[in-house]
Image (cartoon, rainbow, N blue to C red; front, top):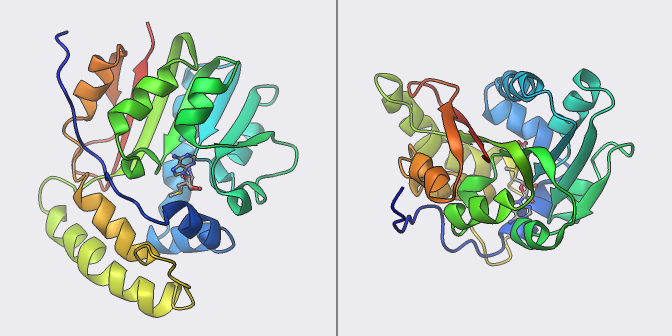
Length: 239
Ligand SMILES: C[S@@+](CC[C@H](N)C(=O)[O-])C[C@H]1O[C@@H](n2cnc3c(N)ncnc32)[C@H](O)[C@@H]1O
Protein backbone atom coordinates (compact mmCIF):
# COMPACT_ATOMS: atom_id res chain seq x y z
CA UNK A 1 0.00 0.00 0.00
CA UNK A 2 1.26 3.48 -0.84
CA UNK A 3 2.52 5.24 2.25
CA UNK A 4 1.00 8.57 3.17
CA UNK A 5 1.34 10.72 6.21
CA UNK A 6 -1.19 10.05 8.91
CA UNK A 7 -1.54 12.60 11.65
CA UNK A 8 -3.94 12.07 14.53
CA UNK A 9 -3.76 11.93 18.30
CA UNK A 10 -2.94 14.67 20.78
CA UNK A 11 0.29 16.39 19.94
CA UNK A 12 0.86 18.23 23.21
CA UNK A 13 0.24 16.63 26.57
CA UNK A 14 1.98 18.74 29.20
CA UNK A 15 2.19 17.05 32.59
CA UNK A 16 0.27 13.95 31.46
CA UNK A 17 2.75 11.48 32.93
CA UNK A 18 2.61 13.26 36.29
CA UNK A 19 -1.19 13.31 36.12
CA UNK A 20 -1.35 9.54 35.58
CA UNK A 21 1.12 9.03 38.40
CA UNK A 22 -1.05 11.12 40.68
CA UNK A 23 -4.19 9.22 39.58
CA UNK A 24 -2.70 5.81 40.47
CA UNK A 25 -4.44 5.40 43.85
CA UNK A 26 -7.89 6.18 42.48
CA UNK A 27 -7.53 5.07 38.87
CA UNK A 28 -9.40 1.75 39.04
CA UNK A 29 -12.26 2.89 41.24
CA UNK A 30 -12.81 6.03 39.19
CA UNK A 31 -12.51 4.27 35.85
CA UNK A 32 -15.22 1.84 36.97
CA UNK A 33 -17.37 4.77 37.98
CA UNK A 34 -16.69 6.94 34.93
CA UNK A 35 -17.27 3.98 32.57
CA UNK A 36 -20.60 3.47 34.36
CA UNK A 37 -19.66 -0.06 35.30
CA UNK A 38 -18.48 -1.13 31.84
CA UNK A 39 -14.72 -1.18 32.46
CA UNK A 40 -14.60 -4.82 33.59
CA UNK A 41 -16.73 -5.96 30.65
CA UNK A 42 -14.41 -4.13 28.22
CA UNK A 43 -11.36 -5.69 29.85
CA UNK A 44 -13.00 -9.14 29.72
CA UNK A 45 -13.62 -8.66 26.01
CA UNK A 46 -9.94 -7.82 25.49
CA UNK A 47 -8.95 -10.88 27.55
CA UNK A 48 -11.21 -13.15 25.45
CA UNK A 49 -9.69 -11.76 22.26
CA UNK A 50 -6.17 -12.35 23.57
CA UNK A 51 -7.09 -15.94 24.51
CA UNK A 52 -8.19 -16.57 20.93
CA UNK A 53 -4.67 -15.72 19.73
CA UNK A 54 -3.23 -18.48 22.00
CA UNK A 55 -0.18 -16.41 22.93
CA UNK A 56 2.94 -17.50 24.77
CA UNK A 57 3.83 -13.93 25.68
CA UNK A 58 1.82 -10.73 26.19
CA UNK A 59 2.98 -7.22 26.98
CA UNK A 60 0.51 -4.64 28.25
CA UNK A 61 1.91 -1.25 27.25
CA UNK A 62 0.58 1.59 29.40
CA UNK A 63 -0.67 -1.10 31.78
CA UNK A 64 -1.62 1.34 34.55
CA UNK A 65 -2.32 -0.49 37.83
CA UNK A 66 -2.43 -3.84 36.03
CA UNK A 67 -6.11 -4.83 36.13
CA UNK A 68 -5.93 -6.49 32.71
CA UNK A 69 -2.62 -8.19 33.48
CA UNK A 70 -4.13 -9.82 36.57
CA UNK A 71 -7.13 -10.97 34.53
CA UNK A 72 -4.79 -12.47 31.94
CA UNK A 73 -2.71 -14.17 34.58
CA UNK A 74 -5.88 -15.95 35.74
CA UNK A 75 -7.21 -16.99 32.33
CA UNK A 76 -3.85 -17.69 30.69
CA UNK A 77 -1.71 -19.39 33.35
CA UNK A 78 1.85 -20.00 32.21
CA UNK A 79 1.87 -17.20 29.63
CA UNK A 80 4.77 -14.75 29.95
CA UNK A 81 3.40 -11.35 30.94
CA UNK A 82 5.00 -7.93 31.14
CA UNK A 83 3.57 -4.56 32.08
CA UNK A 84 5.17 -1.36 30.76
CA UNK A 85 4.26 2.11 31.98
CA UNK A 86 6.02 5.43 32.47
CA UNK A 87 4.20 6.24 35.72
CA UNK A 88 5.98 4.64 38.70
CA UNK A 89 3.01 4.80 41.08
CA UNK A 90 0.84 2.99 38.53
CA UNK A 91 3.42 0.20 38.29
CA UNK A 92 3.61 -0.01 42.09
CA UNK A 93 -0.04 -1.19 42.00
CA UNK A 94 0.59 -4.07 39.60
CA UNK A 95 0.46 -7.48 41.29
CA UNK A 96 3.96 -8.27 42.51
CA UNK A 97 4.00 -11.61 40.67
CA UNK A 98 3.83 -9.82 37.29
CA UNK A 99 7.06 -8.31 35.93
CA UNK A 100 6.99 -4.65 34.98
CA UNK A 101 9.22 -2.12 33.30
CA UNK A 102 9.21 1.62 33.91
CA UNK A 103 9.62 3.22 30.48
CA UNK A 104 8.09 5.41 27.84
CA UNK A 105 6.48 3.13 25.28
CA UNK A 106 8.46 4.26 22.25
CA UNK A 107 11.76 4.08 24.13
CA UNK A 108 10.82 0.65 25.43
CA UNK A 109 9.91 -0.48 21.89
CA UNK A 110 13.28 0.65 20.61
CA UNK A 111 15.42 -0.80 23.36
CA UNK A 112 13.69 -3.93 24.65
CA UNK A 113 15.23 -7.20 23.50
CA UNK A 114 12.28 -9.61 23.61
CA UNK A 115 9.51 -10.17 21.08
CA UNK A 116 5.87 -10.81 22.00
CA UNK A 117 2.85 -12.60 20.58
CA UNK A 118 0.48 -9.88 21.73
CA UNK A 119 0.95 -6.20 22.52
CA UNK A 120 -1.95 -4.53 24.34
CA UNK A 121 -2.75 -0.83 24.23
CA UNK A 122 -5.87 -0.16 26.28
CA UNK A 123 -6.79 3.51 26.69
CA UNK A 124 -3.22 4.47 25.77
CA UNK A 125 -2.84 5.03 22.03
CA UNK A 126 -5.06 8.11 21.88
CA UNK A 127 -2.81 10.04 24.26
CA UNK A 128 0.32 9.51 22.23
CA UNK A 129 1.68 12.53 20.35
CA UNK A 130 1.73 10.45 17.17
CA UNK A 131 -0.25 7.17 17.39
CA UNK A 132 1.00 6.03 13.98
CA UNK A 133 4.61 6.39 15.12
CA UNK A 134 3.81 4.49 18.32
CA UNK A 135 2.32 1.62 16.28
CA UNK A 136 5.41 1.61 14.05
CA UNK A 137 7.73 1.48 17.06
CA UNK A 138 5.76 -1.29 18.76
CA UNK A 139 5.72 -3.46 15.64
CA UNK A 140 9.42 -4.08 16.28
CA UNK A 141 8.51 -5.88 19.49
CA UNK A 142 6.06 -8.29 17.83
CA UNK A 143 7.01 -11.78 16.76
CA UNK A 144 6.12 -12.53 13.13
CA UNK A 145 2.41 -13.34 13.26
CA UNK A 146 2.02 -11.42 16.53
CA UNK A 147 -0.90 -9.04 17.15
CA UNK A 148 -1.37 -5.60 18.50
CA UNK A 149 -4.70 -4.97 20.25
CA UNK A 150 -6.08 -1.45 20.69
CA UNK A 151 -8.98 -0.51 22.97
CA UNK A 152 -10.08 3.13 23.04
CA UNK A 153 -13.08 5.33 23.55
CA UNK A 154 -14.94 6.33 20.41
CA UNK A 155 -17.74 8.72 19.59
CA UNK A 156 -20.54 6.28 18.77
CA UNK A 157 -22.32 6.44 15.44
CA UNK A 158 -26.08 6.91 15.52
CA UNK A 159 -28.45 7.91 18.29
CA UNK A 160 -25.96 7.31 21.11
CA UNK A 161 -23.74 10.16 19.89
CA UNK A 162 -25.77 12.91 21.56
CA UNK A 163 -25.75 11.21 24.96
CA UNK A 164 -22.06 10.42 24.61
CA UNK A 165 -21.16 14.01 23.74
CA UNK A 166 -23.18 15.39 26.63
CA UNK A 167 -21.66 12.93 29.06
CA UNK A 168 -18.07 13.02 27.85
CA UNK A 169 -17.63 16.67 26.98
CA UNK A 170 -20.12 18.48 29.22
CA UNK A 171 -20.82 16.43 32.32
CA UNK A 172 -17.55 14.52 32.85
CA UNK A 173 -15.10 17.46 32.90
CA UNK A 174 -17.31 19.29 35.43
CA UNK A 175 -18.15 16.28 37.61
CA UNK A 176 -14.50 15.19 37.42
CA UNK A 177 -13.20 18.51 38.63
CA UNK A 178 -15.89 19.00 41.21
CA UNK A 179 -16.18 15.50 42.69
CA UNK A 180 -13.46 13.13 41.51
CA UNK A 181 -10.25 15.14 41.41
CA UNK A 182 -10.90 18.32 43.34
CA UNK A 183 -7.62 17.77 45.23
CA UNK A 184 -5.68 17.64 41.96
CA UNK A 185 -2.58 19.80 42.40
CA UNK A 186 -2.45 20.85 38.72
CA UNK A 187 1.21 21.23 37.72
CA UNK A 188 0.83 22.83 34.34
CA UNK A 189 -1.43 20.30 32.68
CA UNK A 190 -5.18 20.05 32.22
CA UNK A 191 -7.35 18.56 35.01
CA UNK A 192 -7.62 14.78 34.45
CA UNK A 193 -11.20 14.60 33.18
CA UNK A 194 -10.87 17.78 31.14
CA UNK A 195 -7.89 16.10 29.54
CA UNK A 196 -9.97 13.00 28.82
CA UNK A 197 -12.49 15.10 26.92
CA UNK A 198 -9.79 17.18 25.21
CA UNK A 199 -7.80 14.19 23.97
CA UNK A 200 -10.98 12.46 22.82
CA UNK A 201 -11.78 15.45 20.60
CA UNK A 202 -8.55 14.80 18.72
CA UNK A 203 -9.49 11.14 18.36
CA UNK A 204 -13.30 10.88 17.97
CA UNK A 205 -13.78 7.82 15.73
CA UNK A 206 -10.06 7.51 14.89
CA UNK A 207 -10.85 7.20 11.21
CA UNK A 208 -7.10 7.22 10.32
CA UNK A 209 -6.46 4.19 12.55
CA UNK A 210 -6.92 1.42 9.95
CA UNK A 211 -4.60 3.27 7.55
CA UNK A 212 -2.11 3.77 10.35
CA UNK A 213 -1.99 -0.01 10.77
CA UNK A 214 -1.62 -0.69 7.03
CA UNK A 215 0.98 2.04 6.52
CA UNK A 216 3.08 0.54 9.26
CA UNK A 217 3.00 -2.92 7.67
CA UNK A 218 0.33 -4.57 9.75
CA UNK A 219 -2.18 -6.91 8.11
CA UNK A 220 -5.44 -8.57 9.18
CA UNK A 221 -6.76 -5.29 10.56
CA UNK A 222 -10.01 -6.11 12.37
CA UNK A 223 -12.63 -4.19 14.30
CA UNK A 224 -14.15 -6.22 17.15
CA UNK A 225 -16.89 -3.88 18.42
CA UNK A 226 -19.47 -2.01 16.33
CA UNK A 227 -19.07 1.68 15.51
CA UNK A 228 -22.27 2.35 17.50
CA UNK A 229 -20.45 1.51 20.73
CA UNK A 230 -18.67 3.94 23.05
CA UNK A 231 -15.42 1.98 22.83
CA UNK A 232 -13.55 0.59 19.85
CA UNK A 233 -11.54 -2.61 19.88
CA UNK A 234 -9.13 -3.35 17.04
CA UNK A 235 -6.49 -5.94 16.34
CA UNK A 236 -3.83 -6.09 13.64
CA UNK A 237 -1.16 -8.66 12.85
CA UNK A 238 2.49 -8.46 11.94
CA UNK A 239 2.91 -10.67 8.85
C1 LIG B 1 -5.74 5.70 30.81
S1 LIG B 1 -4.50 4.76 31.54
C2 LIG B 1 -4.88 3.12 30.96
C3 LIG B 1 -4.39 2.05 31.91
C4 LIG B 1 -4.78 0.63 31.50
N1 LIG B 1 -4.19 0.28 30.22
C5 LIG B 1 -6.28 0.48 31.43
O1 LIG B 1 -6.80 0.13 30.37
O2 LIG B 1 -6.95 0.70 32.44
C6 LIG B 1 -3.11 5.13 30.53
C7 LIG B 1 -1.82 4.51 31.10
O3 LIG B 1 -0.83 4.57 30.09
C8 LIG B 1 0.35 5.12 30.61
N2 LIG B 1 1.02 5.80 29.47
C9 LIG B 1 0.50 6.76 28.68
N3 LIG B 1 1.38 7.13 27.74
C10 LIG B 1 2.48 6.37 27.95
C11 LIG B 1 3.74 6.28 27.30
N4 LIG B 1 4.05 7.07 26.26
N5 LIG B 1 4.64 5.39 27.75
C12 LIG B 1 4.34 4.60 28.81
N6 LIG B 1 3.18 4.64 29.48
C13 LIG B 1 2.25 5.52 29.05
C14 LIG B 1 -0.10 6.04 31.73
O4 LIG B 1 0.89 6.25 32.70
C15 LIG B 1 -1.29 5.28 32.30
O5 LIG B 1 -0.91 4.40 33.32
